[in-house]
Length: 159
Length: 126
Image 1 (cartoon, chains in turn orange, yellow):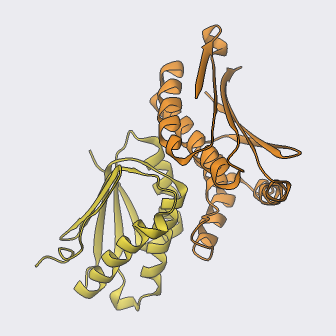
Image 2 (spheres, helix red, strand yellow):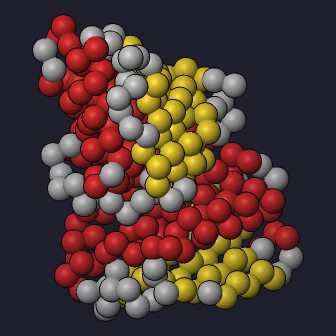
C-alpha cells in the first residue's frame, strides 16, 4: 500500500493503490475518515468520508477481480471528491451499470428506501444497500465510468 | 433467568454483541464480509428469546458501535421482517439508542426507522 499526500491545503490529495483484500477495508476507512476530519476540521465530514470510502471499496473487493484497486480523495472547490476504481469482468461492469442507472433514476432517499424494502428478499451474500447508502447517507453525487475491464465510481459531496 | 440471558454473547474479531434482560449491546465495528453467517443467526436467537419471553420492547444500545457496513444493516432489515411476520401478540418494538455526535449512526438509524415503521424507534443516548 502506498500513500501520497502533497500540494497546498486547498487541493490536498490522498492516493492509495492496493491489492483489493478484505483485511484492508477497515484500515482504509479509518485512515480516510481521520484524514478528512483533519483536513476539513469537521468530524461529520470525517464520518461521511469514512462511510463512502468503506462502502465503495467493499463493493470493489466483492465484485472486482482481486487484481487492482485505486482510491483517490481530493478537495476541490468546496467539495470532497472520492474516486474508487477497480478491475473487473465486463459482465460485472455491465451489471453494475444497470444497477447504477436504476438507482440514479430516482431520488437518493427513495432509492435507499427501495433498497431497504427489497433487501430482505435478496440472497444473503449481497444486500444491495451499499451504493444507495453511499448516495443518501454520504450526501454525495455519484458518477460511474466504465472502460474495458475496469470500473470507476466518483463520489462528490459538499465539504 | 432474565429474558435474554440464555443467548450467548457473539464475540468476533473487532465486535462484541451481548444480550441481557431486554437490552442488546453492540460494541466495536460491524463490518464482516458475511454477517449472514454470524450476526444474523445471533439476532435470530435474540428474536426467538424475545418472543418467547413476551417482550414488548427491546433496546439495542449502539452507542459503542464505531461502524456498521451495509451488509450488517441487512441483518437489521431481516430482524424487522421477523418481527413483522410474528402474530401481533408476539410482536415487539426495537428501540435503538444512538450516539448523537456520530453522523453515520444518525443517518443509518433514521433510514432503519423509516423502514421499520411502528416496530422501530430511535433515541439519542449519551
